[in-house]
Image (cartoon, rainbow, N blue to C red; front, top):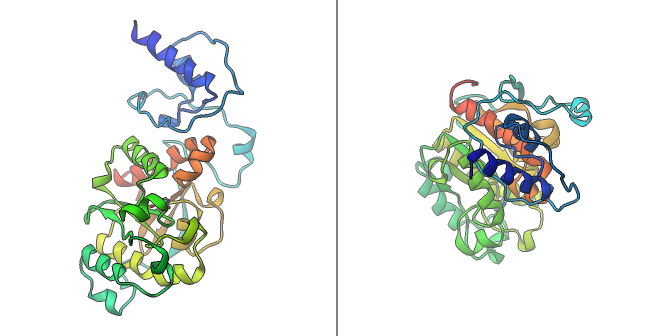
Length: 292
Ligand code: URA
């Protein structure tokens, strides 16, 4: 079969399953249909949306096909960044190059040192119910650090961050901006699982925060991506929503911070995949030196 027909058939299937957003390269199904000159065929808008569409079929397309601006995004308080938009400056936490804290963590010079302290941590009660600490994993020289909320059941079982369903989506999101899990560092604000995946308590965040800070201090990445409300609000010391925080380059002790939706939220709400794609493209541009 001709490649164009294959692509059209693929797109029709996606549309019939209720997926109108491809997210990658800001192209929607309709955009690509127009691009390949495919005739519009019947769609079933009520079909259930599927979550696992982080495919890079169209990643190489350079076409300048922009989706129409919806009324919702037009009235949104924060401009949605496109691949060429200039992101505004955001919240600044701390100043560049300052030593963040002292104490025993200042004696930790490697990520393994920090992990050892985390494994022995008794500063809150989470260690009592957790099976394993989840200190984080990846490259000590990572240029991009992903910050999530807290380990879930799969992470608690394995001692590794983001290995469940949301983690698999995170891996695909990273691949979409040409990064493997090994190249980045993946970490959570909390290092032990809250029982039953309940929301982290302020006292737990306060106990755990120094570990994250020290990890960031050791890695000194080029960009941090905060996935989800909790990571964003903790890092940026704010109560603002993701909708208000995304689209800007915030600063955490001089390190640019990009805020986006949590992969678990994307599994529940596929409409957030497009903005998430735009946000991680912003992180990619920072890595590429296009934005600092
Ligand atoms: N959600 C998170 O925030 N972190 C994980 O490691 C897994 C799920």
